[in-house]
Amino acid sequence: MVPGLQLFYEGKWVTAKCVPNSIVMHIGDTIEILSNGKYKSILHRGMVNKEKVRISWAVFCEPPKEKIILKPLPETVSETEPPIFPPRTFAEHIQHKLFRKSQEALLNK
Image 1: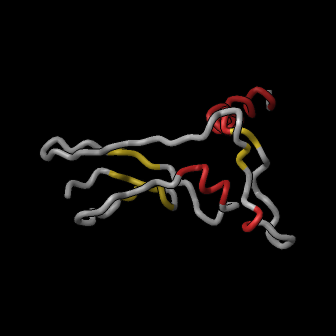
Image 2 (image 1 turned 180 degrees about the vertical axis):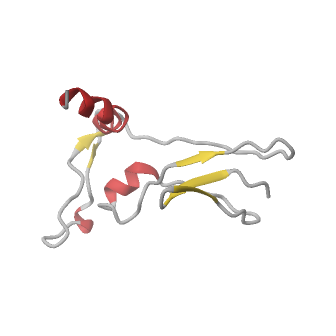
């Protein structure tokens, strides 16, 4: 029951409430893409508490980087709700997410 997870929400860091006997799962970018934005990946961070011990266990699951094409599932797309994410491999998504700002800066010079 030691708080430590913070989410960036509406322009500020908000501490998540501790819920006894629970697991917090961050769904990440993959579910946001598959759901065509219906579920959101959110910026988050873990905080340190100098007085109390807190255990966090981060597990990262990712598809084969070049074999799987990430794109919205057909059930989440329609004429009124077109795909908001282009099809791309996981490797292309990571490249875009990590380096998009630096690439945009180079293009805007």
